[in-house]
Image (cartoon, rainbow, N blue to C red; front, side, top):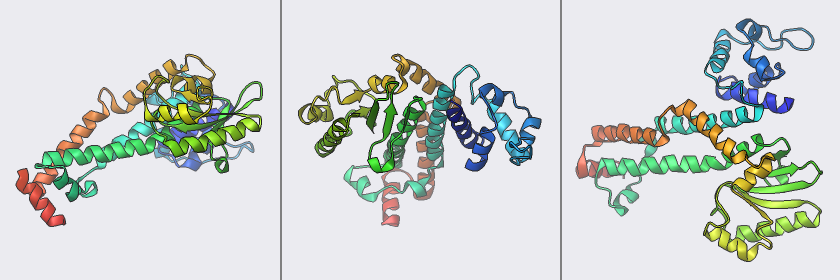
Length: 315
């Protein structure tokens, strides 16, 4: 538990307070529990000492202020446990990265593709910008999802850890009976093709032959979903019901809590509100579209003439 506490605090200090990874770990290791951290005053942060009694880390006034601001903003909830606070911090970091990406978009880094403009019959700056903003935002979010959900799964469990990189698996969990469970995580219910399913069917059988258990874990969905992936699994993955953990099955298994999925979504929603308040990411995307559309018109003009001028100048 102490290790997870220090990992959680270090994550918060790095991502919410902006400390370097090294300083975040050093400061985090000083605290025995959540209450200890929340009760720390400015003078305590100025005098963090090591075992020898010597000053262990030198925090600037600005860094101390940022740590105190993190506590003031409620980034760590005194009424939540370490796991829930970690889930919240991971979710905040993910949402903030997407928000920063959208707010940083401009016409230069958006770089609309002239071939798509013509092929998809886009006539106005509004159409050109809207399509490209959504393409970039969606690509960023989807690309980040795999690592995001893996971190959520790890924070949800006291007995799961990242599998050794050379093994090819994502997670490994040892239960209270010393059974070892290997999990290959997929973000959604339609993320695998035939070749991948055949490959992981063989890998699962290898683990079973070695005395362990193994699964394909899918982070959301139900067995009744009529997806191409599930259809192929039924044909090519022997005993597919026993070799998969789908949706809430995965989260409840990882956490050893049959109602964990309910708690998880409450935590994620609360974390999102800390970054977006009452807005949604769609509202941020719409604001971005309006801002970049204005930039486009100011640079190239409005209507079809503006789009034509843009293509002439970049191609």
